[in-house]
Length: 294
Image 1: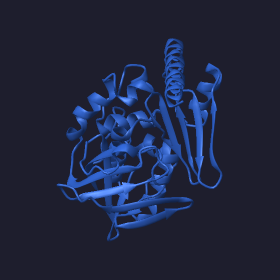
Image 2: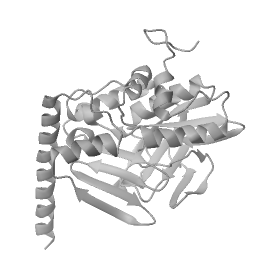
Image 3: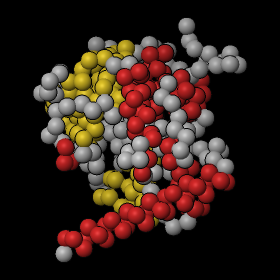
């Protein structure tokens, strides 16, 4: 039975409208590809609520409602809700524990559980599906070892030669270039403790730094603190610093499509002040690192 909202409408109606989609008549690979493209282009990877000290839970039904209302989220929200939507459309979806690795840790073969990854089987093929990396593939990747190209982007999938079977996904243009993925199925409950840590711990990157990302066919838009970047392999990376609150909130609502209706004047002041302080701390750390290198 399709879940319903309190007014009796289909739970997924607003979500599909946000994606610009009518309900596909049946699950096909073509529709899966189109759904992932739309998800990455229209629903941002973002941590605004974490920055404001009110992180949302990761129950997929809650994330579905938040997306319909114009919000985004990070991997547990994005892939959690996407999995639920795909299942409602008839796709065979499996959730997996995964872990994102930065350059210094890329040779590790363990899985931290700080990422939720998906695989989807349709029309006799299995795909790596991820709407929750922010800067990941624009379309699903066939779950086969080798090099996969999408436009100017190149990705790698390889077996994970760790203690448990799985996969390694590599994206050399990403700040965190490797994702380790366990093959075994997981459930939402497996991510609850890590979500609590990531959304509340003082040393969590989600707590320390505002981040929004949006993927399109040609590149990735990223806002980290006050720094707006555009990654385009054909044209290179450009960046600029946002100098005013007006410019800052215009970018959040415009470039990233994150509604601002839920933010009061006090919320906006608090968020801008937090971003300013973090930017100053970042500049100071860069200056200190430069002095040590001389």
